[in-house]
Image (cartoon, rainbow, N blue to C red; front, top):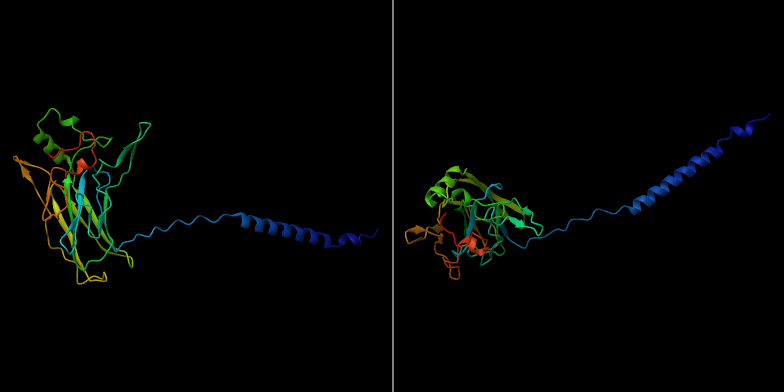
Length: 266
């Protein structure tokens, strides 16, 4: 019996070729069906400089950012917009980082941060300060927690709160947007309410370019306001016209939280 016809590999070769063509076709179809990953939108910040201050995210303390421009005007929690400077948010620490949802649960954003955006260029020197405004204790709903101190005098309670506080690390970054670069980064330790520190001074020309070196000479923006023998809300030295009055200027009065507004004894 002649088996020569069974020795041909043409049929097997055709089968392999068809299989390969099929796989190639399926690969092309699969490749066409793959959806490219959606590109994240690039949110361009229209600004010249951005100043970011952060402190211990797990602490309830309230640190305030102050920036003075070459015209001697200052942006801060009671004057969040002045000239080309804008304060994004007055962060009170824990107090305005919590939201009570409709189902009764609580959502907390564990971030302590204030940001000042400088949207235009004014040639001259800028000064960046931070001030330790409050070391209050807050409940999990962002309300002032006084339960632990109801039975003892306020002065003693305040001292106990202060004694148990650990020092805070406050960090400030200075970003230049066009072209982007981190110009300066620094940290300082804050250990008491009322403490104010000048972090840095920098000078720019009309094009936004830095002139000379950074300077660290201190300048105070906040002085205590004494009324009826008590130290009340801080006053901003040389505050420009249009700023809120002392009576309406306490930070908590901006938010109207129950048990918070109008309290200035801490």
